[in-house]
Every structure is written in C-alpha cells, then in structure tokens.
Image (cartoon, rainbow, N blue to C red; front, side, top):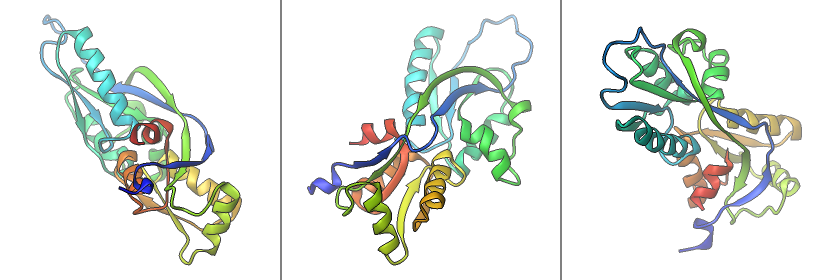
Length: 223
C-alpha cells in the first residue's frame, strides 16, 4: 500500500478557535420513586463514526456505564451538521434516558445558519457537563505537492476548479474555518460536506479529496 494512503500531513495547526464539546439532555421531569437509571441510557452522537465526537461519546458512554450501573449505548445519528441527531433528542421523552453529545457548532452556529432546525437550543436541552476542547487542523494527503500553507494557497489558485477540502458538514465550525481561510487568503478552496469528520479524514487519507479541516483528535486517531 502506498504511503499516501497511510499518512496525512498537517499543513497548518490551530487555524481557528478551539471548539468545546458539551453533554446535554432533554429537561428531566419530576423524579419518580424508582431510582435512576433503571434501564439502558442512549447517548446520541449526531455525526458518523470515526470522528472526535464519536470517539468522545464512546469514552463517555463506557465511563457512565460503569458509574451508573446501567448500560449507556452510543447511537450515531448523522446528517445536516448535527441537526438530525439534535432534533431526535429534542423530541425524545424528557426522562433522562436520552442524552446528546453536542458540539458548539450544532447548538450555537446551526440556529443561525439554518432556517429550520427542528429544535430550540435554550428550551429543548439542559446542560450536564462540558467534556473537552478540540483543536482544528488543516491536513493534506501527503501526495499533494505543497509543503506549507503558502505553497498550498498557490497550488489551490493554480488548480483548475480549485482544491477540495472535506469537513463534518455545512455550517460546521470546521467549514467556517475553511471559508475564513479562503476569504483571508483569497484562495481557491472548495468545500465538500460529509456526515462527520471521520469520513472526511478517511477520504483525505485515501486521496479522494486532497484536504480536510478536522479536529486534531480525528487526524491523529486515523493515522
């Protein structure tokens, strides 16, 4: 197998702000006499497997299962930059058995980027805990003939149709990072939306797209 399919190189690290990850659930109703939890708890991850949200969700689910004494299972519900998963949790019974692993992009950016999202961030969710931060990295397939950001911008502008970069979805924070770079550098980058950071990184590794904006965790766990 060619090295280009096994490794991915970082062009520039921390090009954008750190993105917070929060664990949220629908507001709980009054406590019943039965101790919580008395059955399996679902943790909805609104992106495809393989990305930092999915990996974080599985770590949290395993730890919660041990602490609560009940199984916590991860359910991936990708699509629409997290809106599909968020709407499903917002419509779930408010009994504490459906949790949501949410990025700031889904709960903060999406309400301003989409005309209809099917949930209200402030009314439909009750925060439980912040679980971490994620640094955004611009990475390229090693076969790409650019050794640094300056060379990458020159290559993008010299390439007919520009250079494609994959992200976890439209209006995601990584998409905004890519558009910010494009705007400030006046470069010819073209956005390709995926249903999660994992698939975007996988396609960059395989050479199907030359670039990806993704979390450092997604890059490092895929190489």
